[in-house]
Length: 349
Ligand code: 1HN
Image (cartoon, rainbow, N blue to C red; front, side):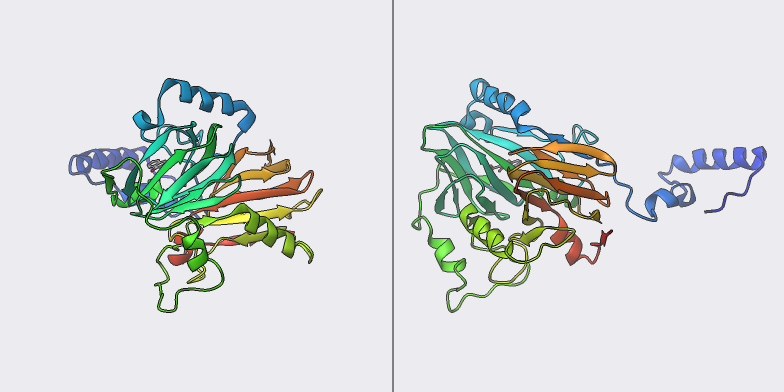
């Protein structure tokens, strides 16, 4: 950018010119070009952490103030501290903690926004997706792809809390949001529990089943037991210095992410493991399923333990440190960025 000094006369002429064109909704590019096309990402998103032990009681209090039916979804949104009022945890993604009490139903609806759930606390709830229920267990990764009917219920005896991740800011950006309410509060199951996982998620597929690369998977639950086994299985070999043992969830029919807008990952860090510094352009939401540790994000240190949620903004260098053996779940907009040719990462030593 040119930094030549200009006379006060020219400065004044330009200012008056900007005011004259302003009335026509015109503005000069040269005053904003540097900010529009930065040399590297300049995100407004702030690093942040939510300590589950500190916020759990606030989530439970919502259960005494409003029913799931009245709220439709009883959720406390995890708002990025630098994006308050935007219902966003990153520029493209939304996150929240949803509570469902014994006997409650969160009524059936569908929308073009894609959603994921990561079960954190309590047992006995279920989610139904397009006519099939799945009982939710801690650590299960459950998806409701765009325009799939979904409702939740709790037939157990404990409050159940899960982390919701949605592409709400992305759909808002595209102005492509549609939604519908179901005619019944709960879908009547049309398939037995476990059908989709057996049919589409057992290293086999129905013989005449084919999907385009952008289509979401029919596997709508990735049980934690399988994720844990896979991570334990790869942890017998050497760890990646930047990632530890990290796997991405996939649509087994295509190899792409389970849903086109959100990528999800599970990561095992052995006790005392410290990752080498790393950054990528996908701002990422993490939650700790097991263990405890610290994350250092551009010099800011956060301690995390089970069920804590933290966010690493785009292009922020971070380093994870595990105390005991630690298992992290994470999600980001990586598949969108990769599909558009925008995604970059950098590994430091
Ligand atoms: C939604 O449908 C759920 O189905 C949770 O559990 C959170 C936030 C915004 C819009 C729709 C759910 C949501 C949501």
